[in-house]
Length: 178
Image (cartoon, rainbow, N blue to C red; front, side, top):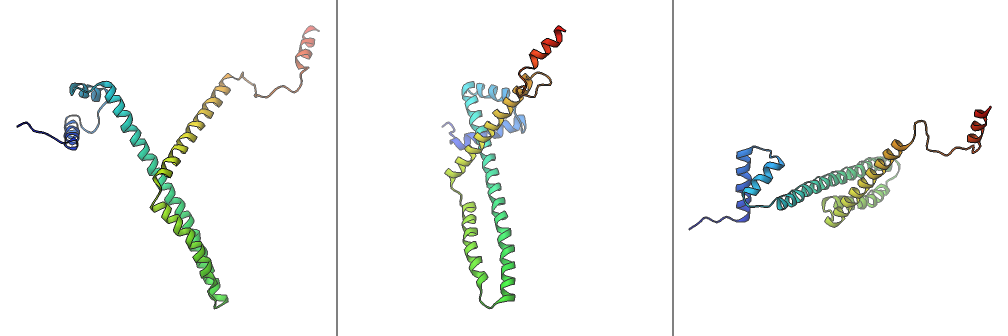
């Protein structure tokens, strides 16, 4: 009876075999050649590479987004703790009515909701933010490239602004005739 492997076992065996044979890194051409020997077309390999690298890019963007969310939460938490301690101290010195607790509880609701948004993020909202940031980065790149092209096309000494004196060329022509 021939051996049979699940998809996960096949993936694990092939990945481990490639690691044993080639080490930790493989060139793109070696990957295409190995896939060709296994009967996998170059187009299928290129599509798989695009998906894997796209997934890696998306995971990196998600990790950066999560790290930024935690930093923003702590940037919100530190003033809350500092101001609450200050208000509690002032409350202790001035009156027996615990008015500082009202402020702490009201602000604490905002802190708790912020923590909840960081700990249990909405996956759809995260994807929208990642896509928005990616689009903004692409737009910025296009603006930078356009500015570089504009600067390259400008003649030396040209500031990019129109001359204020429209008669200047006529005057220079008259000076040339004298």
